[in-house]
Length: 326
Image (cartoon, rainbow, N blue to C red; front, top):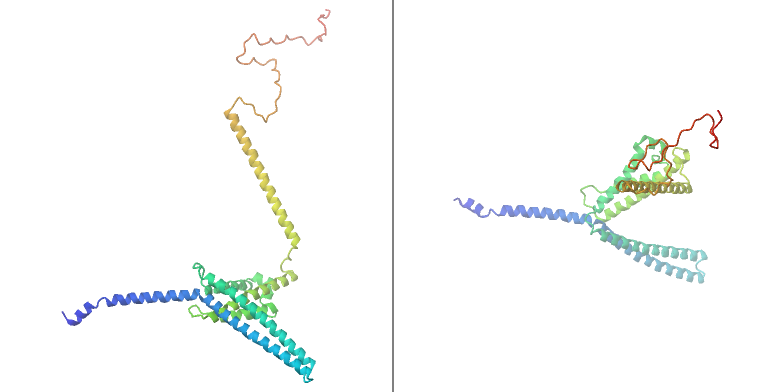
């Protein structure tokens, strides 16, 4: 055998091993990307929490600097080298710095809660990845807005949804453009900062769309394009009336079913016990048999009273046994 072919025969296992290693590497990369996609919201929450903590540190430093500035201006005022306006300005700056510090502390608390929620969402494998969920929310708002743009009836009834001169619609269109620009490409690698920017844009898009839609409906009601809303007490009264009618209908149906079941049971009992009288029927005294009626079956003939003798109609019967004269 040729030495070259002998060497190839001895190293035949290299090709399957290389294919297996490549497959495992591809699967590992896919799983790593999937885990990264699921951790995207968690990583973004961690980055935002770090930024919020840095903001708290900066705001506290600003508060200390503002307090020192107030003390300096007050000393200058005591030395007649500063005016009362300078003192008021320094105090206002101190108040502004303190408000900013309180806001930064509240932001840290909010970011911590967001991080906790993102950590809890990591265990839900059935939920879609955070970026896909954001895209779904974005597409839902776009579909709702397109209904006002493509439906002729809605376009006539709600012209404010397409008029950029309306303030709420103008803000919505600006946020919509920003959200479309911040939306990542389908196969692009997204960093936590890019995800956070896109998430905030989608949240603003939902908020501004609700405001624009509310304003459009208000203008449509004012112009008479759509009927005005009923008062709250009218809606509540209609709700109570509908519930009462439903309850009465159910009660009547239950009563009818009870009567029918009792009637069925009585008929069944009457078929199984023929000699038993129906307690629901009224007891009446037996009426006298008619004169010409035949004797009841099974009764002896001697017990049957004879029929009364027929008397002539004329002359008129007397009260006594005296017969009339001829």
